[in-house]
Length: 224
Image 1: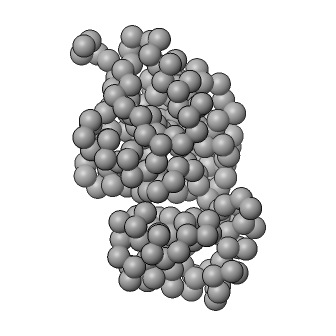
Image 2: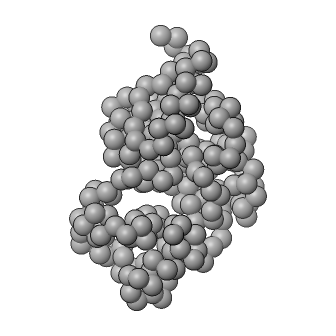
């Protein structure tokens, strides 16, 4: 194998997008697809096993979220850089991406070649964010500099008081997941998920689960 090759893991539950991107990467000798996954749990296990240079993660995969995976990798001081793929440029998800320290946030309205370009930039230690994403930054976008992190650009929303974990729990609950299911997805205890739920509801001044779901839809945390 060429030592200069960039090893990539692709994780997306949309098979057509995942396979098309894999084929495009396979046509470029600079890249080697080291594995593919269709959910967050399998993606994280594959990343920890293969230790790729770049992991391309869909934002709406079942199981563990791309933000949780990015946070785990950062805590483990992994050298794998994360590219997030999303169908939308929503403030809530962009803020989570910045907070978890991902290297790139690419919207799916860009051509596949732009995603490949983002992977190439991220592999060299740079960051890339789609134009629609950069437009929502309140600070300078790290387009050609270091990847975003906690102290980088920010997107100010009414949800800014929530921690990264509280945001993840909110996303899962708003999709109709039970506390037990959220705990399994995020590999947390039910008590920990309950504690996060109580804190986020207190911060948002919301008192019932149904009101929480309505709020999440209204704020575009999830779509109905």
